[in-house]
Image (tube, rainbow over all chains, first blue to last red; front, side, top):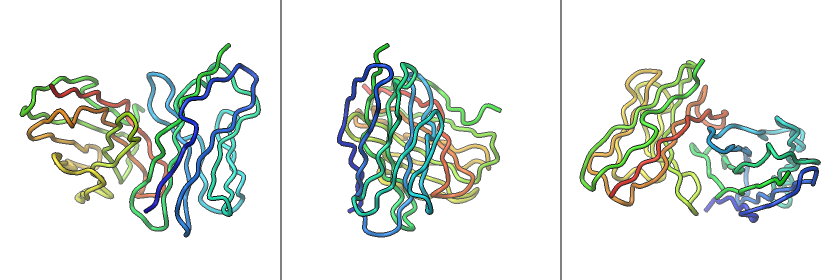
Amino acid sequence: AQSVSQHNHHVILSEAASLELGCNYSYGGTVNLFWYVQYPGQHLQLLLKYFSGDPLVKGIKGFEAEFIKSKFSFNLRKPSVQWSDTAEYFCALRAGNNRKLIWGLGTSLAVNP
Amino acid sequence: NAGVTQTPKFQVLKTGQSMTLQCAQDMNHNSMYWYRQDPGMGLRLIYYSASEGTTDKGEVPNGYNVSRLNKREFSLRLESAAPSQTSVYFCASSEAPFPHEQFFGPGTRLTVL
């Protein structure tokens, strides 16, 4: 069965630290991958997405993610986090022509000023 | 441009009561979705509507019904609420069915006693 794993459930960083949140999926075919973010008290919103082409995807607010097919991974990175990056981050997968997204359980990020 | 709106924001029900969660979008999107979010379970798709006039079951449709009233509105009905339906409910919309970006509403926090 297709699944998405986000191994880090809670991450605490200081401002200016580098961030990498892990996302691994299980599916052997074509995938579309997404990272969504939910800031405290706000809607879920799209950070970035991978459909095809360049495996290094850049998103909003300085975030990027790299699709590594051989590792079934789509890790989210940011070189220097800010307090305003405190949020919950969700990785999601569309496997093949499946008509639904499969969501990870989320990673809660707290950035200390 | 309000995006995706949901009403109510909070609701407390007694077991067996019924209620309808309302969702509307003003982005002229064709597809709409209802999710529930539970601790440790991530986001799970309840129902979706790929286009006006169509609805399909998601992962966890039992105990729910939906109506795609028109292109803008997609409601979720709990006919006989159960404590297991205590959750946060999110409505989302997208220009077209997966894998397009989904835009989320602010959520409805429902407690069933």
